[in-house]
Image 1: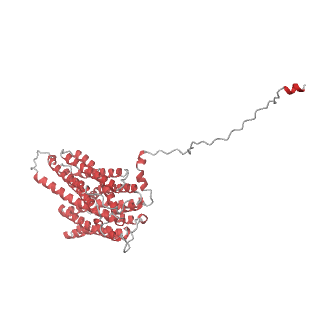
Image 2: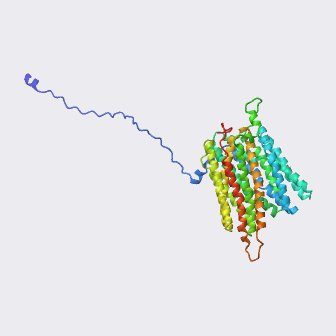
Image 3: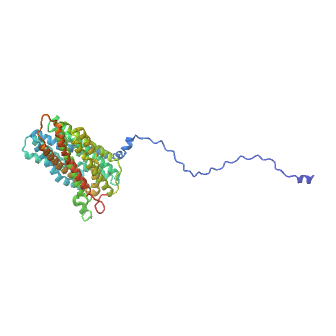
Length: 474
């Protein structure tokens, strides 16, 4: 029995399977992305204006920009108001033109000196007394007109306005200081400033004409002087965004460079000559358009035609600010040449449109031609900023404005001469001949701004990169 039991295999009793223990989770190699809140979709217009929203998100920028616009608006009013006031009281456009030309020549001489003092001693310390002196000159002109003073007093009074500070240059200097390490923001700021210039020169003459004709001849000068003084006082009161005064120590290597005029900086004279030719475009285009519209029997439409040209330039300036800035001096030069070349090509459109005798076609041509001027000015201002030391930035930009004003005076004279020559060579008028027929011949005067644009392009080709490192690059 024992052997029988021993021979049987031993079987273990059935064991209930144990509950399986869950294995520890193996860490996944896939990267778990955090859950982000739903992104708010902004309208395309808001995304498009993001560069400008970024500019004005900096504290103090809105305040000094608003004040500067108030101070800059009279720049488009003072000369027009003076012409209308003198011509209405003295009955001579020639005298009015001579007085304003004298003031422009005085500004060309005194303006850079005022800008140099602003760079050395600060905006608030120099701009306020310079503005007060200029406003007193405008009020003196008004009193001389009202009291029938001798003619020479008109020239002396208006020459006193030469101390007018370059408000646009001071605003650009603040942007350059705030975004000295951000080329993209400086590019957007320069585009905005150029659009602001176009806006002021578009609204200023319209406002001056309305005040002088609807109220009394002296109203334009009074309002312009009040806005100018108020705007400069409010602008200079914004001390938080004012650029610091550059330290000047004896024996410092850069002190001698800062003491000389920016005119001697390499590469700057060709740029200033380009600004001179660009100003000749503006001056001749204004005179020829006024004469063309007058001869076409639509003198009242001339202001709207010129305003549309400025509106096209203003819109182009704002859109140009949305483009990415150029990197490096060589790229800046190439873009500047392309802008000037485009401007020279588009300035042929008014010449061709005027030959059709249609004011509508000419207005469209002026609108398109104006869209090339703002990008040219923005790129040119950027080149001047890059080639001018920070301690002389306001002086360098004032020199560009002075060159522009001198070009406007030269272009106005050349355009007026062309109009007079074409008028003298025109055949005698006949009652049966439509008034607009002579406009076909007068349209040849648009060759003056076209020639000035071609000259600007030729000068832009000379604006090569200066040797060495640019003084204010970055």
